Every structure is written in structure tokens, then in C-alpha cells.
Amino acid sequence: MTASKLPLLILNGPNLNTLGTREPEIYGRDTLADVEALCVKAAADFGRTVDFRQSNHEGVLIDWIQEARTAHAGLVINPAGYSHTSIALHDALALLEGKPIIEVHISNIHKREDYRHFSYVSSVADGVIAGCGVQGYALAIARVCTLLG
Ligand code: DHK
Image (tube, rainbow, N blue to C red; front, side, top):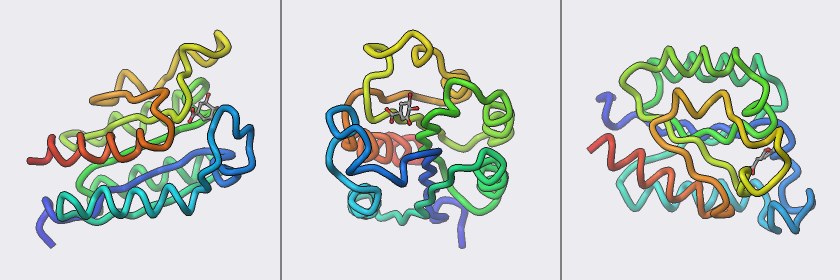
């Protein structure tokens, strides 16, 4: 497979498996399966496919990011709670040289508690989308595809 036609990796961090029932007033009523379907469609509009994954475990997310060095064209990541805590996730993403990375937060983290305002991921992402609901994933995929050309 040519590098440009590798799938996009869509990574979801801890607790996002509970989307739909988790604090719906903040995260909405769409489930993670709904988000996956949205991502498949958004990527197809650009002639691309997605590899959509979720884990509650930091090390698993890091293993998957390392895999993306050879197996994926670009990355969309919602690091969830690890956004605000994980230098290790930051370091793994820094190794993805030359691959577009867009960070997504469903909620507007800047309107929420102070401890959510900083993300260790943002300084290694090409762009950050927050507060656009699950539509943020589609926007992020569009941006990754634009950066890939
Ligand atoms: C998701 C989480 O699980 C939180 O820990 C982040 C993010 C915000 C989101 O908005 O998608 O603080």
C-alpha cells in the first residue's frame, strides 16, 4: 500500500467507550459506535479509510501511536483525560514525524475546570478542535486529509 493510501488512525482515550450515557449534557448522546460511523463517512468523502480504536489504558494508546509510524497516514486523537496528564503520550506523538496529527475534544475544555485547560498533546499536534461536539472528529479528518493532499 502506498503511504498516502494508508488508513487514518482515530484514537480515543479513557472513558470514551461510555459516550452516549456519560454526562450527555457535556458529551452528547452519540455513542462511540455513532462516532465511528461518522468517521468512516468523513474519511470516505476524501477517498480514505479509518482504523478506529479506543482504550482506557495509556500504554495501549502509546503502542498504537508507535504503530502509526508505519501503518497509518495520519492521526486524529481524542486523548480524553490523558490530555491533561500524559507526558508519555506527548513523547509518543512527537515520534510521528511528518504525519499530520489533529487533537479533538468533544467539549470546549477551555470553558470547563481549570485543570482541563492545558493539554500535553497540543504542542505536538498540527491542530486542535474543541467544543464542536462529535462533529469535531469529521472536521479533524477533513483537516488531516487536506494536510495529506
Ligand atoms: C474528554 C474527556 O474524557 C475529558 O477528560 C477531557 C474530553 C475532555 C472531550 O471533551 O472530549 O477533559
